[in-house]
Image 1 (cartoon, one colour):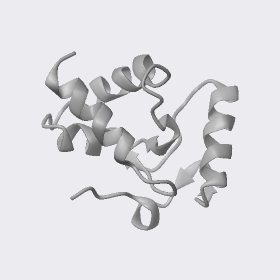
Image 2 (cartoon, helix red, strand yellow; image 1 turned 90 degrees about the horizontal axis):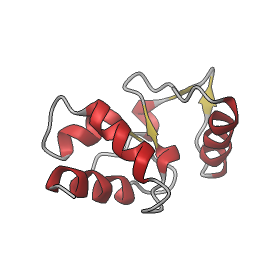
Image 3 (cartoon, helix red, strand yellow; image 1 turned 180 degrees about the vertical axis):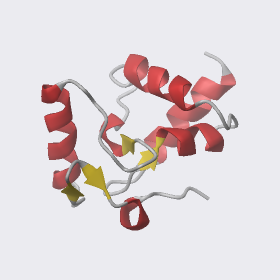
Amino acid sequence: MDSFTEEVIRIIRSIPEGKVMTYGQISTAAGRVRGARQVSRILHSMSQKHELPWHRVISADGKLKIQDQETRNEQLERLHEEGLEVQNGRVNLEEYRYEPR
């Protein structure tokens, strides 16, 4: 596993309950400004193996972008359970974005 992948996994694990981060935000924090798609692939392929809180990762506009309806509903349910409000498929990033130090 390369260092970028390890850092992405570490960052995703650090997202606290009730907060979200964007793919691009994670990529930038891991050292690649233009690596949002790579973060998506890492999340898709390694969430289960590394028990990542995948539901806390959303798009830059705050939208839930998962196409599969069952998985999208699971993401929505998990976010609601953590106290996040999702309106029209969108999370208010001003309120719920996590900014790691």
